[in-house]
Length: 498
Picture: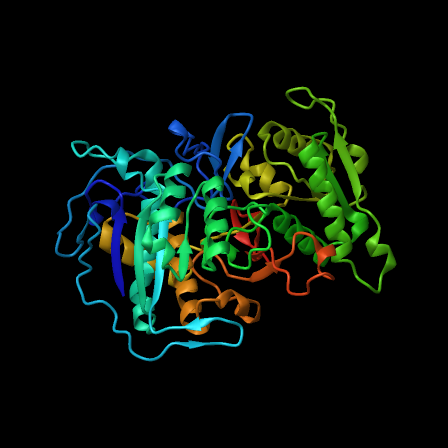
């Protein structure tokens, strides 16, 4: 396996880059910090429109980190490491990977599906390292590049394992600069992108859309790690979305609720906002999708409570009529995450109005895990569940081994992006070797297996099901549908029934 340079950037030592992480000193961090981490603002237009695990909050005008494991950001500093162990990345197109390139032994064959099985595969990694902003006389990386360095360092952690499994990859690392015009320029002229069998990255939605269109036209498989949008591309069987969409989160919540509760016990609660009411419709459709075909009552619409109160503390909210009394269970699904004040007010109203014998269960989305105003006791007493695309079990032996290896190599614990980069590189490297350049056509037959922070359950997505009759082979994209359902119990989030 061979690594190559970050293109179009100032000279940087890979060793310096790999040891830059946003972390506190603890290896095992709590489920959430006492304060929300709000990072990666759209400074100078570099990384705006962040999707998926970092969600834009229009009320604050900032991007909020959505993580299972979070920690307070520390000052980032350079650490000198031996150049013989960590060769430099340079701007001239060279990278001494410390070994010979992979030997192209074997033959190239093409399957009936058009997938090419090769002795070695070209992988282009397009990430916003922002090397043009690096000050050689300074001691820190550009703030918005740190996630890219962490993600790539996780990818490198997966490479020895892939090598041991006989996966030969020629990896080229390219700096997108987080800029749309730069990305378009690279797509037109960079040979590593044009010759790639697989592209991983970038980050911004506009850049993801540009690369998706490039991959569709060039017939190159493209993996997007972060974007959670379902409208990036159409009729694009080369586009794979790793981060589950919000629609998939809604369906995962509804499926878990229907597997454990009766429809008559469920109430949907949302603000009188267009987007939240739209998600109510998605949930109602999912309710029908997962209904018991032998129980007609299971297809009836779920009760809804749409709150039009516009006061800051939602003091006119009247949730009592929706609580089932007499020691019964009431399940509230709340597709709202942009207003912590609203969720906090709802939780307080539920806690105040429930009797001792009443049992309340609340389902919501991953951003709740970053809320810092709501007391832990409310999460515990209301049996709060959230959907999450990732979860790191610090007691898992594989996770502990990875953390020790990483800490031993770099002297710091891994950020969540590190584990994500590791999982994506390991999984898709294996799929390349097993199925060839069009491996996505075979992913639906793969059994989802646990990696460090997720599983991969890739399914085809058809945005307009009515078009299936016109083209039975229509594929708009592929999406990882695996979602953890996490319950706040014993004062931390933990997976249930996964």
